[in-house]
Image (cartoon, rainbow, N blue to C red; front, top):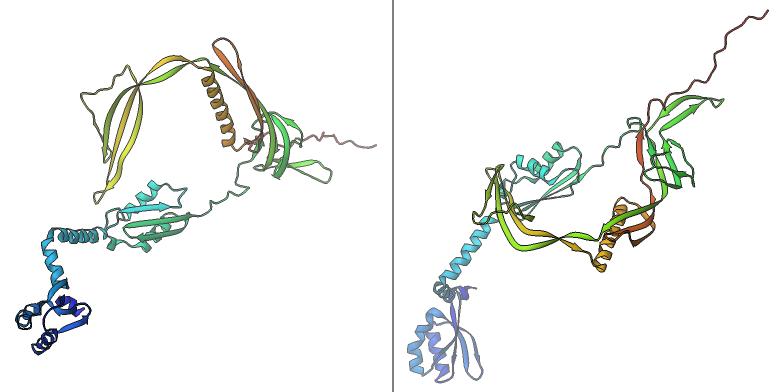
Length: 414
């Protein structure tokens, strides 16, 4: 390392009296190392002592040739020649070190009841925002403050990862409403169907397996009668009915499909407008040479270009680009293939809506037939299992006990 800091050269020589040359170098205190003889003689010498070899080489007729230059002095000479590159590299390192001392992004994970915007506002009130110094960041204080503000959050983690602050939360389970606090209600049927299965957790069953029911019929009643030893109803308790009922529903459908429709044709004309919102105020940037034609129709595509909060002033800035695509409507007639695709699309949409409502499809069929010269008819039948139920409040009249006891007058026996 000391030799590298001082700088040295690698030399090669073939001619002359090499032994005498080496002895003279030793006599003049010129240090050599890594001396080896192959086809020629190779040796290392300090760069500052290379000029001292000139008179010695002349006396011994030795010609030392420079093969390589190594060490810090030669590296510094190269850096001086390319000072723009190295200065730019050093500036880049300095700028990287400076920018890495700030927090540039805050991420949120695990929230469901609380929106990202709510958490962002709370964290900003703690003076924690993108662009702050990392030295001012106190993750333990952030965790403690969030738990104090939101009691429903059972676990909070604020972790600093480079220039990113990662906040992860875990929300506690929602408090279950006690049975006595819940409003008394019945469970009712959402569709006409046949009861496939019934299980009552709370309340009184009003239907049996295999029984056909109408829409709105009470399946599990929220009224529980209390009887005495003679099976007389002495009281009616009201509860929020709870249980599971499976209905087999067979639903027929019929939908008209006109043969003609309005087809959308784009003219190719597009207009762009930009909106800038700063601190709640909106500024619209329009091109005066290109104005919207109110007689035409447009598809509007909005793109949010930027949505940030500028610190330390905490001013929200939002930039939106709106693209207006002009189109015209003209009357068109479905071809046979297009008519089938339209009917299939509507049919699939109908099935998807049932699946989205957590219905279990059992069987389904559909057919396309002509109603008249301008209209086709999509008909079919869908069978599915419905496990969701509606609710209806228990009325005061339903919870009253009817008194069927007939009053008798007392008589005297003679």
